View 1 (tube, rainbow, N blue to C red):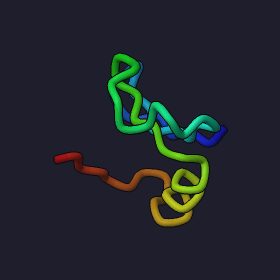
View 2: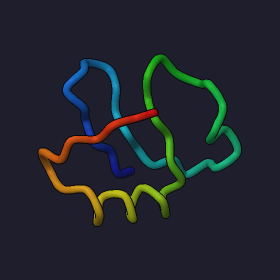
View 3: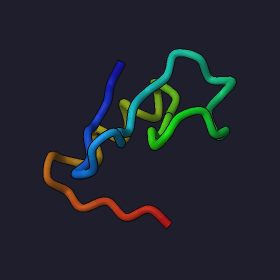
Length: 54
């Protein structure tokens, strides 16, 4: 599983092998992506890149 830690403890962006729960609240801070989207995300965003969520 691909994952990226953010500068906030307990919050990560990661892939998920199970697509059904994506888009629903299921944790206390993780941002879940399909494994395909996570792989794309990691090719576009390098280490140290600022990411803003709106």
